[in-house]
Length: 508
Image (cartoon, rainbow, N blue to C red):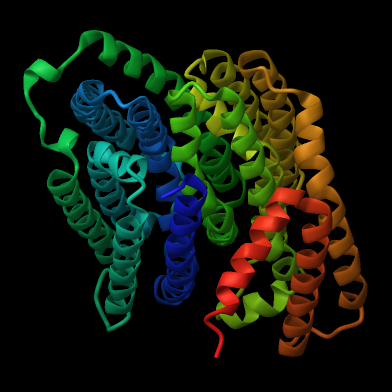
């Protein structure tokens, strides 16, 4: 199967999964907000943010392991592949134990006046913290199996198991609505058990299907491979820590200045941002292995070209949904949530703007990872992202409202994008002219035209279902047409026509 067909096939699996999981996740959030209440829901998101400050290792290590596995799959070096997997198992077990120790030590101080939590909910918060620490330990330990599934591009299985995981979380949320005592604690315990079950299923699948996952001989341990992975993962972890701190650390700072009620609003914003971001993330999940394998084959020009296409289409897919959602956010929130937390609307809009800004160079992040030389990238861009914390703290100490922290969030993301461009030029030989011609000039006209066309009628339309339907159809039509003519090149339009012709054969 050609790489383009495989990407299209895997993207289809991921999008079907995304639609199902997004709908279920919205139900989960609604149930939790109703059953836990504003205070406990805010506590849950606060604890998630604290644990997330170290759980960043999960995403960082997954990407690091995936890079090495995909690289050697592309290079067709079977022995190195087994060595990488075995070394990653050793590395992740050590890191998961380190995270466990650090979080447990941190827990001794967090609930002793550092976090703003009502006195009568301290016990529940501590139990929830322990459950989420256990969840992080399990998740990090099983990262090599997640990376193997993605590297081998078995995304149908990934889609199925991820959907099952969300279904189990929905069942857990529904269960606590049936009169269960200690709802916050019981839901956190359910998340721990679900995580363990799902990771064991993934490990069994890898053992049955991938040769390198059945090799556990100590002879496979290669100190040079281990050092290379450790160095790569270390810098990746630093970058991921900075990225997580930019998001989850902001939740902690908000808590210090505004309390748990504001954490509930920010939790809603992060939840919405995560679900909408999945529209582009799923496409990237299908493309990333191909980008890394191209580098493994020594095809850098092809790798850069594919990363620019990934950037363009990721921005399109995210903004395609973001425009009608943003213009109908008040109505959607009224339908979705029983009670809208204070400032949830403005925080969500600004969070989405920051997420969209990140898409401007999203494909280049994978390209730099594929090249392997990430020290300069992570040290510069990671430090820029980390600036969001002291900047937000300074802003809040001056008495500005909570949403100003999200404005700084957007500006920091924009500065990080500029840095990625110059670093890609230095490390990979990316032409800034190529980036401008293949990304910026392709995405800006369709986005601006669609936003203007849809915003004008939004001023006089009442917030109801008809407005949602009208603006959704209008934006979808205008954006699709303008992106087809302005955003796609000749080859992409030809491929689109071929897909359209094939689909037309199945019409009755």
